[in-house]
Length: 527
Image (cartoon, rainbow, N blue to C red; front, side, top):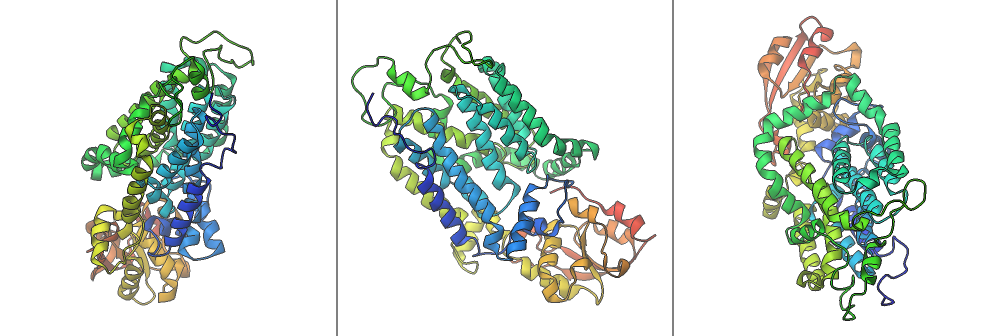
């Protein structure tokens, strides 16, 4: 075997330059625009163990960041760190498969600077941490198939922690179980698989139980998103999957689906000694067709194929299940992306092993994709420039960071003296909560009946004000809830953040029967 086939380096070193680079770029550009509407929502929610529409981890991190500084880049520091960690994890996939350091580096750089990781690293959303969690779970599955002990134990622990951020990880866990049961059943019979399942239940079970006890309100949120955007999102799932993964990397992901050990060349360019005596299978996969270790540490029955031979089929079944889920329940079109990005990392190993043309051009392809992704995903163009209109049409998340101070000022101006502001949008409530105090609006006078904010109750100052500025929502229902409502104009959002341009405002007074009677009737669960 060539000496440089598998270089002895710490696991983190090949991906470290990419990780540091993406964190530096993300933090350097983090403050060019303002907070995202979801970030304002997280900052308004008080820390709690459970919320109607999501687990609490992202909210906790948002409050931890706010306690340090009110700067936007501090709020987004956890997302940038997760993006850097994701680059490290991406480099580990080809390492597990025996690929050399150059392949690991390419996998890390390709992941760090493609569209979806840049999007999720730039703003602090629940999906920012979820992407890293999915990578770790898929990494655990691949590691288990290459004979690494305790891999599924760690995968279960990662999935359990992820349940405190987003329960969507359970779809990935279910997909992994079905894939392993279909293609590598012996892995599920190991002690590590049972330990991983136990950790998942022990760590993440509380959040699942909390949703069940409260009637699973997250299903109402998802159903509302599907009802409003499902038809369009079904059409967008596959096109956005291509965009988010990176168009040049789709063929690399395809190679990851069909990965096999024992390629005709070694795992780095030029390492072809003209014959294949079986050494490549051992080095590239990390194990041979030897008895697979069972849960008691002794050799078990020989599998019909080398365990690593099942990596491609397992990943293919997982990807197919998650993609079908995204099409059947299209609440958000990005659900399937996080399982396809590991396929890209695996695919680089095969492309390098076969010395394919795409591997020989890898640095150029990765660099070109990074430049385009950065122009689309990062706030490089000034908001006032014509280029911003073009970029924000491609990346709506950029316009969702621009209008909030102006919207808060408009609500403060339309608000009658001493009245509260009550909104039908958690983002608008978050904007009033963030910027209102400087405009003379106490934070206790800001409320919303949207999602988890409804549980905080009506405005709280002065024992509960009876005069409000009601912003957004069903006008007929709002008028029925108050004794009197008068028009107060419409919001002007130049960039239409969250689709709020033209939102109606009403000056209302005297909730019929008091807030205790009115507040339950106004509750809204949805996107």
